[in-house]
Figure 1: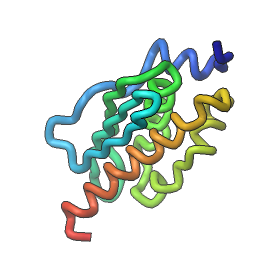
Figure 2 (figure 1 turned 90 degrees about the horizontal axis):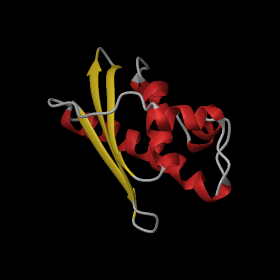
Figure 3 (figure 1 turned 180 degrees about the vertical axis):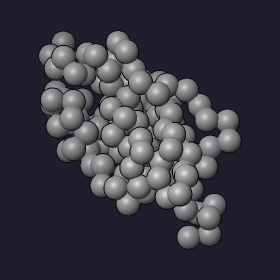
Figure 4 (figure 1 turned 45 degrees about the vertical axis):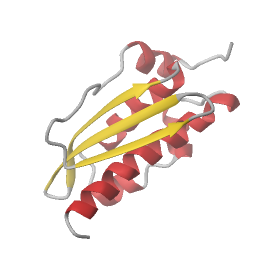
Length: 125
């Protein structure tokens, strides 16, 4: 059993920003068929800032913790700032992830980026 940091455990047991945004400006899905993790991120954009970020994640504790911390990291950021949320940054914010769970941090950053791509596409950019 992997050893998780207190931050990972906190975000797993009390995930922030869980849910769906009905009229989301952008939606991004990312999954890993090997481990079965599936993340969907919903964003609301106001004046180039992410005014709301929600997620639905089906997966392990690390995947839920990653989704929760990514949503917090992205909230209120500009699109450009949110784009800079990398898997390494996510793992650092969570005070590390076990090697076999590091792929979860990739999924969170990728799902967020797909939601941003979806928003920009809808804006014709």
